[in-house]
Amino acid sequence: MTEPENTGISFFERYLTLWVALCMIAGILIGQFIPAIPETLGKLEYANVSIPVAILIWIMIYPMMMKVDFNSVKNVRKNPKGLWITWVTNWLIKPFTMFGIAWFFFYVVFKNFISPELAKDYLAGAVLLGAAPCTAMVFVWSHLTKGNPSYTVVQVASNDLIILVAFVPIVKFLLGISNVSVPWDTLILSVVLFVVVPLTAGAFTRGHMIKTKGKDYFENTFLPKFGNTTITGLLLTLVIIFSFQGSVIIANPFHIALIAVPLIIQTVLIFFVAYLAARALKLPHNIAAPAGMIGASNFFELAVAVAIAVFGTTSPVALATIVGVLVEVPVMLALVRFANRTTPWFKNNSPMA
Image (cartoon, rainbow, N blue to C red; front, side, top):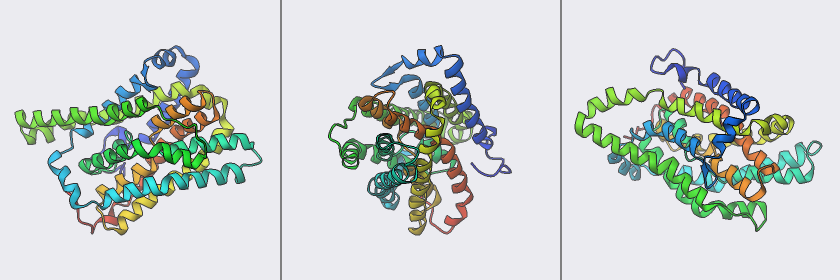
């Protein structure tokens, strides 16, 4: 989001923080007073992936995927520093800082409020979040910070490949247990639904429209028709997610606040690690901002699914991952705002096509 006086932003984007808060509240109220809605929608899932949420995320991402120029993807190899920042931050720093920060708060700062057993469970949930960098939502954050869509796709795609081999070993190492498993059908289906399908659809639409109508029509007439689609998809996704989890949130207000503290600190810390590293390496803002967003946000769909599959729906581990969903969007919106206000930090850096 940018400053209100910028007339290039939509009404939704200008007051996005307010809409997000209202949608989260609406979702909780629906879950409490019209439980038939989340109960019905909850039955529409496959491999622990909610089909309604997947469709909304697809709607959210599709307009951004149409902006990806595959001819420019090859230029990524000319400036690989952004990829290295993403990889190092997400896999050599983030999981371990998440473990350290969460352990400190759950076992030291909050030891008078949380039993050792709960501390262990909440730590497990935090680790699941920390070992899963964002896949779907990062396209929204990239869009709001005017990130390079082609570069963002490569950043996300490479992280998805690393998740396939690194997620389980990292979680097992940090938790020190041998029975952590990952529902591979959930992981693979999530990657296909949240990245492959919208990317393919976007590429097909872009190619077809440019071929039949011309590039000028595509960029100046066709794309603007989808101006509010991304934000609408985000808001409806939040309503559904919080209608699913409303009762859990209402039943655990104090512990949710305790769990939120280390998660928020971790989110802000990792953003600045990647963002400032990009500035130091003189990367353009449209690469630096998405690099910071990917590390700061989490693949919470995967974390929640693994927590439920391994520890159970009502487990404290699952609660911790749900809190990750609760705090992520407001915190990420604040970081989006900060990133847009600090664009001048990168004004002397060479832009990437």
